[in-house]
View 1 (cartoon, one colour):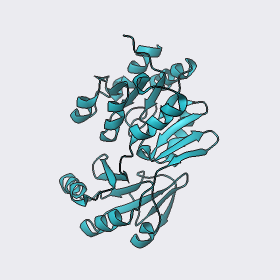
View 2 (cartoon, rainbow, N blue to C red; view 1 turned 90 degrees about the vertical axis):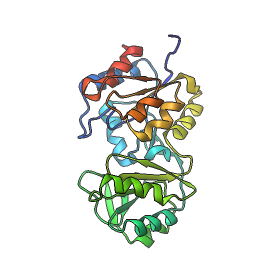
View 3 (tube, rainbow, N blue to C red; view 1 turned 45 degrees about the vertical axis):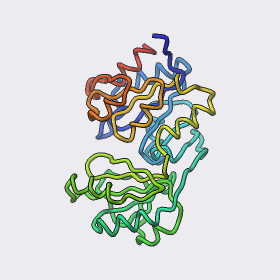
Length: 261
């Protein structure tokens, strides 16, 4: 194949790390070989920056650019240099969600420190400082990302909520179970990566992207080579150029070693 990655974009949860936060040695070593080859490794994640930063250290990545909050935030690190923040007025969507699902917890990201929340989220869902505020307080300032979580709601009911919020000017990404990310319209991992690639002078055709979730769809379609994890949902497989092995079989390492082994 004539393809040769000049930039590697990697989702974190389910691609680099297990869903309980474990980074397998074969994956860490494979990422190291990409770095040794002089090819930029860009983390592209739905995580906020506060919980993205430790993964940069776990992987031993050099100074570089990363995309967090599903594309709304682009950071050059280390040291911390906030390059891009995409925001929107969260008021209409927060009020609508509160009306349709009054028991749901709502969070607005505070970049680099944590979240402002209406009530506590399940343990482990969010990292950083948590400040409890009223719905109206959360509505009062522009936001880069709003998270909705209702662990007590049936998944079907939550998916219906995502369809019924239906406001213009924002985009939606359903995470695992009853988790909904809301971002400015047109903002996703692909839009964030497009800015990074442009700054680095890399054509999208020369980007390798690997992911496993529905918030990776745009990224996998945008990249010259978009690869889905073997255990990703069928809908993710359908948009990918190729499918690697399952996470437990170190599928990420297998794909990286195809080009950097």
